[in-house]
Image 1: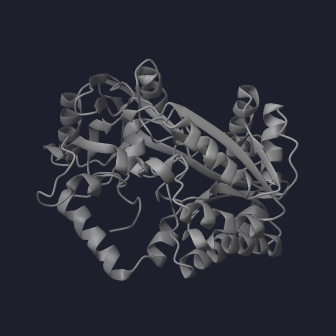
Image 2: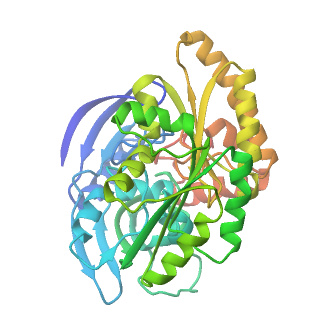
Image 3: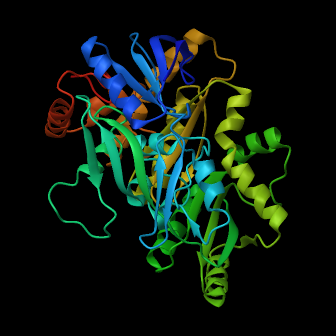
Length: 434
């Protein structure tokens, strides 16, 4: 098991952190051995994956020991009878896609970073663009092997398709951000690739015009594989970064929709229906145009980062509150003299808001951002939303999570933490304070 000195920078805040050491286990036995040593030495442990997190969940803020699972990166077994793929936690989403590329199967979740590890995806319950049809990470994991703080191994979930046998321990660990145990191995749900896929782009004059169409699509019985929204000002960042042109389609707000399935004529009929929802509709038949549009959509956040420091948010609200929430948050940003862009997943209410520093001084940025975030999270809570849809809470959203979660819910979460990790060894201080 390799070890090295480790100094890390929080990629979101720029804050410098220092860990006591970083270990690179190559097996589950190594993980157990390290867990025992950490307990014996009265240290704290943070598990890290692909370094793609956006909430500070793996940031060492108090000389903790870091354990990187990047070398536990073996794909262990493809079982086509139970439709499961068994992998170690350090395997990346890109590696899973590459492995399955020559098979008739695919792993459905499609989070933004393809270099993220599957263990990290499970730890944050990552979502992605295909969640509206195929669900989030939680819906695509059948079972996991977890090492607890006292170094015991725990099997959670099973490869059975139905299971009503006691508490669902698997779902407790998914989304726990490494605070309850170390996920070392996962049995992923895979499924047959659809034979056909079609994409369409719809343009609208405003989000107010776009919003009712989302409800109409969802109520029609049609289940898109993706249902993405963005505005023209968001797309301009990607165009500059990638040097690609967005299609010549009128409008200020857009829906990018993917349909997939095995009945080609049905997809064509559904495309006709979607095209009827807007005077500005473009079916992306040309592969080059289709790829360019998806590259532009996928690069929004990273393209903003090339031009300015930003605060990336991933709030979620009920689907009928998307448009009014974005309008309200935009007005708040204007009043605070802050630049902001908004995009996200229309089918599940996940709004990505990127607050942009531009030419503000560090002092102005900090003061304005803190005031804006206080207002933003208060509004999201008021409409029934939550502070994170798929990035997790970590350190950055912890104050707002603790402020707006119900008292009884927070007490219950702390009780679960104490039951699995009574000495508070694993990722202490993340999500909430004990």
